[in-house]
Length: 389
Ligand code: NAI
Image 1 (cartoon, rainbow, N blue to C red):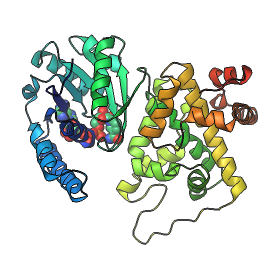
Image 2: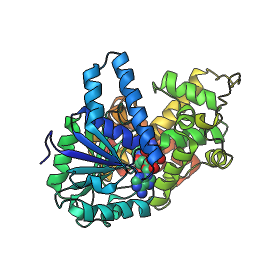
Image 3: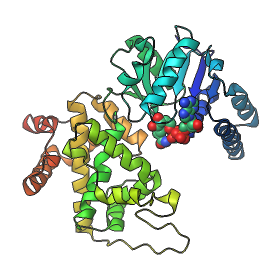
């Protein structure tokens, strides 16, 4: 269905769209990228050239490849230029009405064979596809930031997607050197759902006063083996993005208490303390700022890690239980999409499912909150004495 000569369209030349265009152009596709804002287009073109020049400097590619990649991309401020595309990936503002409007316009511009994908992180593919002439040719293709570096791509069939088209899109993205996983069209797909407790349980531990922010980050890095602590990562992502993802997943899952956002993060957002990008979030990023040191207490550190870890495992198990994805894809998604040191289901097997069950039951008993309810999948593994892998 797709070949090297397939023309790839990208709509939106912001952080994600420009990265996706670079990935497809590096794989030698002819790429057409459209943005309604001319300034965003010229910024993307300059950034692409700068990013390729850096790769040449680091000897990752030669200058011929860099020139080829630039020449493969046509920057356009006219949506009609995308009329001969075989696949169009939309990466514009996260707003359903705006996305629907663009997709409905594309129906009158493109051929009946063109496949339409959205890079949305939180909207339902079903609702986006409802704006298209033929919903069977619409799916989600969800890259991670930065798209040029992060290997994971979630492929999300919509309720009306043609399975063969979905499969061909998966093969195409695989051919770009990415690792694809298939996720059901559910809030947060795999990564943005399973990762929620990494932030929310850390916030809860902090709000309860069990440990302070640097101590929680220290524990998750030094004992848990994560590349970044939850608070450092929230500051890096920005609270305007991270908090909103949490809130969106929570509301779309009918206010399931497992996903309830934290007020301490909401206050940062309301106060404009967005994290690194605004100079201050949970940490102060001013040049001479003095941030508190962690309390390097091993017992406390282990307690923090195990509490966050069992909540992550519980969510991974529930994601499997609800058939959002299979076990191999859930583990691959968390290691390749957010750099977790291990797949969570593999981690559960190693940690011992009886240990996970015991700790979760302890939390549930103590707090008497639905937030700590155990996934039936975990319970089933425990009762049948089986493992995930
Ligand atoms: P961005 O704000 O960097 O870029 C969006 C671009 O879309 C802007 O250049 C804007 O001018 C353009 N645009 C807005 N409305 C348009 C329209 N009607 N027609 C054409 N162009 C239009 O946004 P970003 O971060 O690149 O996000 C894009 C999409 O990717 C969103 O759906 C977001 O949820 C998703 N996403 C974002 C990730 C991230 O970490 N930033 C990660 C994965 C997905």
